[in-house]
Image 1 (cartoon, rainbow over the protein chains, first blue to last red):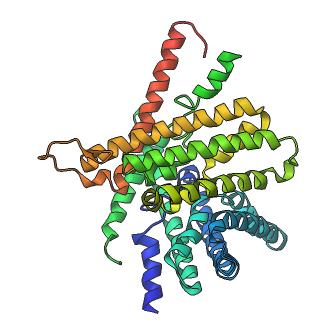
Image 2 (cartoon, rainbow over the protein chains, first blue to last red):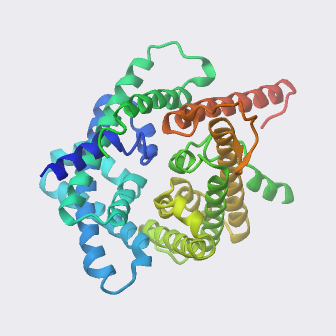
Length: 192
Length: 209
């Protein structure tokens, strides 16, 4: 039990996907303009990551390994995740139209994204069990959402600040992200 | 026509540089630029994938049903990436290990898909190849610049050779994550200033871009 808890906390703060592994930066900089959008995005990413890494684990363990075609891992996972996201979008649209109104646009954005593809690849590489994969995926999703929300709050404040002309927009966003990464560094070494 | 082809190639270098201006495919720009050799390998792989993929997409563009074009493009990209992964694993196993998961992630780089969708699916093979190659060169260039700065300042070496005096104690932050973010922030704004400056001086001479 402790094992799982440490893995979860590690994924949320120590090995934060955005700030220490640099995955999902496109979304991180693209959607973090305002707080509610980034919170929605964070939740959508968490849901997709958890579900798709469970699928990916099953496919890897019961299809790719027995047939000895692990060199096809990348191509399989990409197609798996893209079609899974499509399917999820249809299901959500059919059964919970309200949720779809909130999440719909984000779902399409994450169909092909580094963070969603990177996670199952890292799970496979580290040889996690099924349970651990899911916990790791969920933790990473929460970590991603946390970073998004922090970043969005900073950027909302920045809009009122007097930033040098050439640094406006992306430039200052990167520097803020650097400061966030620096503060997350305080957690490093806390959990191996 | 010649000017047109040159324009197609060269716009990726500075004016539409994939990292500094378009700000696409940032993940590798930060993740593998802590040493120059890794960054250059990554740049080469991406150039190769983008050129090949643009070529393939521009050939098949008339036969692909528009509704399924994105899955087709992704399959094509994933195939080329797998090929380059296997090649690298066979001929440069150490580099392969260093690049790790980021190599597989070339599949989902926004820049590759956006070139396939935005350029190759509307153009004939020759300009498409040039476009992919030019964008790849711009990417390679940006990666090399970022990695050179990070390796020289953060580690005192360039391509593994010691270039700083032995009394120099490197600030580790440049190799670690925060330094990468901050450095790219300044590089992006530097690039913005440069382009603005060029535009202004052209406007002053009464030329149009």
